[in-house]
Amino acid sequence: MAAVMLSSGRKLLQTRFPRPPVRSGSARPSGFFAPSEGAMLPAGSFRDRLAFITGGGTGLGRAMTMVLSQLGARCVIASRKLDVLQETAGEISSQTGNQVHALQCDVRDPQAVARCVDQMVALSGLPDVIINNAAGNFICPTERLTPNGWRSVTDIVLNGTAFVTLELGKRLIQAQKGASFLAITTIYAESGSGFVVPSAAAKAGVEALYKSLAAEWGRYGHRFNIIQPGPIRTKGAFSRLDPTGTFEKSMIDRIPTGRLGKPAELANLAAYLSSDFASWMSGAVIRFDGGEYVSMAGEFNELRKVTPDQWKMLEAMIKGTKGS
Ligand SMILES: CC/C=C\C/C=C\C/C=C\C/C=C\C=C\C(=O)SCCNC(=O)CCNC(=O)[C@H](O)C(C)(C)COP(=O)(O)OP(=O)(O)OC[C@H]1O[C@@H](n2cnc3c(N)ncnc32)[C@H](O)[C@@H]1OP(=O)(O)O
Ligand SMILES: NC(=O)C1=CN([C@@H]2O[C@H](COP(=O)(O)OP(=O)(O)OC[C@H]3O[C@@H](n4cnc5c(N)ncnc54)[C@H](OP(=O)(O)O)[C@@H]3O)[C@@H](O)[C@H]2O)C=CC1
Image 1 (tube, rainbow, N blue to C red):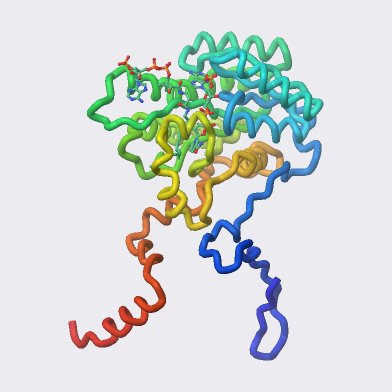
Image 2 (cartoon, rainbow, N blue to C red; image 1 turned 135 degrees about the horizontal axis):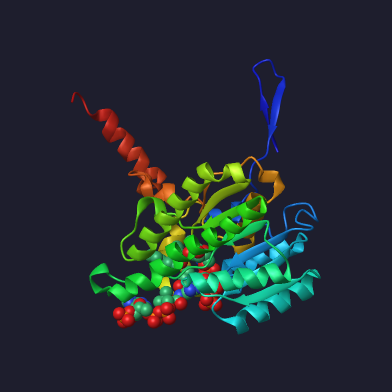
């Protein structure tokens, strides 16, 4: 804590500064930004709530299911690989003591989505929380993409999110039940990005879908929010986006907080957005990336590499310039 002093000598306010780096002399900013794990919201925040999470068997979907379950939710996780889902469901429910159901569902197929929702309704009812997290992606120069390659990603990400949202939205409206919808997109949904073009296009479409429905379906008691995560290590993402591990260091170097995100950090944000504490939040797009996006965007940000001695020299050169 540091006190800010007024000229009168009176203490104005106390400001909390991040902890200093762990290693003295270390230039790595990650020491300032240690991740906190464990559920952030009060225990029982999701008691008597049902959460439906697509892609909940692995990676970030698994982490979100874990936190919601720790906070008292009953969860239904759905994706293509039933064995993976069942293993995750068993592990989480044995840790939290709350039910986690695994349902096979290929979100690209609207009939499969309808059957999955039928099964969920029979098991537990309609959900209070829906998290559209399932995705597909791979790096590929766009000139190498086949139509089927394009379809394999856009069908999961954009059509899959739309089919899940339409199926559940219509049934919730019919039942006059409110719900929180959350979509997991990515920071390049906003900027676009080469080499992951189907994913960029589809995630941008998901954002347009969710912002549009935030406006249209508020009258039915539905909220729609979006998280744009930066890089968080998962097998699914890293095996398809950096299969050799070559790019990881340069990626971390451009993140002002000096590290990758952690699945549990993302999960706490998702839980907050899906909770009653966020009942006034709808149509929000939250970038959660350790500062990577702004770091890549600012034209002068590479000047971080300039040393103090070099700055002295630059300043002298600038000040020595006369006229325009
Ligand atoms: C500089 C960057 C540095 C580091 C990056 C590291 C970290 C990440 C940082 C940020 C991440 C930001 C965003 C992340 C977004 C994500 O979505 S990550 C989640 C990724 N998870 C998954 O993708 C899981 C599910 N994926 C899959 O199941 C497959 O990968 C799938 C291909 C998407 C779908 O599988 P399916 O079985 O349906 O498809 P296939 O039959 O195998 O293929 C269908 C057609 O696609 C063509 N294809 C497949 N892979 C490739 C490839 N690598 N390159 C080119 N084409 C490919 C395949 O050939 C088929 O087409 P066809 O031959 O014409 O039939
Ligand atoms: N990790 C990261 O750095 C980032 C991730 N994201 C986003 O986070 C989310 C989770 O990604 P992450 O956990 O990293 O990766 P994963 O690969 O672990 O997660 C993707 C999930 O989607 C499911 N899935 C894929 N295709 C289908 C389908 N047709 N029908 C139903 N489910 C499907 C997969 O399960 P199954 O194979 O069983 O179908 C899997 O569980 C995604 O939306 C991704 O775009 C965004 C930015 C950064």
